[in-house]
Length: 311
Length: 305
Image 1 (spheres, helix red, strand yellow):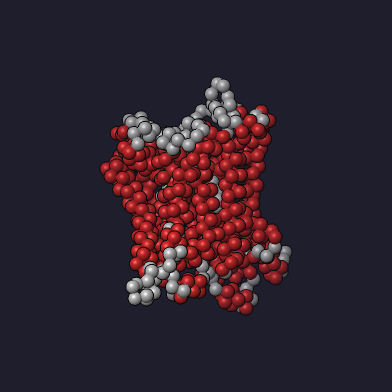
Image 2: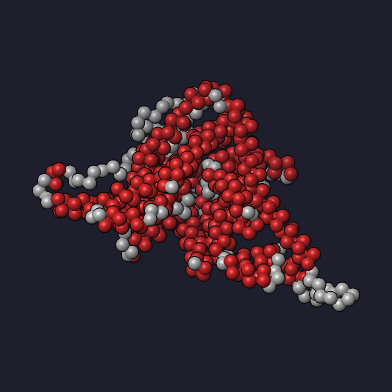
């Protein structure tokens, strides 16, 4: 950003200073517009790369087989391209994750917005935010080598790679996001409503559970949806701790493969790039992109709703 | 939680023998305390997990970190292995990502804050940036694989990885920079215009210097995110075993989190400890980055006051 205001001399020589300045102005406006347009190009790039390969893939595998099949064995001799086991694994991990992140996150948000002093909040919140900054590969390590042994101590049938430990740890990774979006929503509930409830003789618990949380419901809902979206897209924790077994069912103590873990598995393997096996990762990626996109839009809708209501 | 008070409500207010009305204060107060306790326990749970994680990692890994660990290449033998190539790869990736993402991100936010008219196109760009922030990182990896590795023909190079990473952190830089630009009071802009400045002169001499601190802080935090990202780089095909120093942007590379991932996936006990050692180094790098961002923000705040 250290450019001089003057345009290059070759261009400037023929122009009056006023015109020169106008050219400079146009140049920078165009330059900055181009930068902003890169974001649109990124989205276009994502859609085009994903769709291009996916359409090729569906040239060989019928869409319906892909979306409804319950066997996923593209890397075996007898190939089946039913994606449901991967979706099943993804949902299983996400369910565990949000059943940790949502209650703990919401209660934390309530503590921070309704109970904690300003001072305590200013200490606790940044520390909690550290959880969101820790690289996911670190969580994967922690899930595999700390949480899994504990689970195996309690439930001896637990497999080394299992859904539960990956999901629990993922829940704590999502926790700061869940807590901070919910807290914003709780704090947006106007003071008058709280004071009205207190004036009617409500205790603090009653104010929280019957006025504040219901008032912030759409914001809390947005946080929940965004948490699910994050859990579905999270990769390294599941690639490390949840295993690589495409499987139907909800046995949380067993190993399951998620969509994201499958993409990592193929990327690390020696599958030749121009094969149908390899193009599966783009088909799976497209499905992942669509799922998270729908949820992000939905969550955005709910955030807007509470903003409209109170701001 | 909300069920309990409801259940208490139908019972008529208990009265003493004297017939004086008494609300059920004890029960309600007790429930209130219990709930407050629950919220405290939840908050502590998050903090406790963070403590357990850091304790576990440092207990296993702190002993690993020494000169040999930092300066050796990876190896089949845990006692000889180090993360030299991963550390250098991370530095290369970080530098290139910064060079690509910083001007793009700042340019985009200047456009959106200082130039953009309120049209459907502007709103579309904004919506688009918000959506990009929610795209899973592994999908960026697929984009990088299709676009940079194959179509641009960059191969599995540091440059392809950095371009992928730059797109990934671009929304973060834009959001932070826009916030910094928005914090600059309009009176400064009007003053510049009143003196006859053109829009670009106003931006360059008035707004950017005032917003520089916020922009740099946001950029550092976004880069910190790039340091820890693993999935997109694995997807574009970054290798897990590199036994040479990357010399240029077209070289093959690996980064710290990929090296850690590789060690975690190896079954022998020695490698798990190496992974912990790698994590300690990774967390220290992140700590330095974050400390730099905090220090910068603090200095800028003081200067503005």
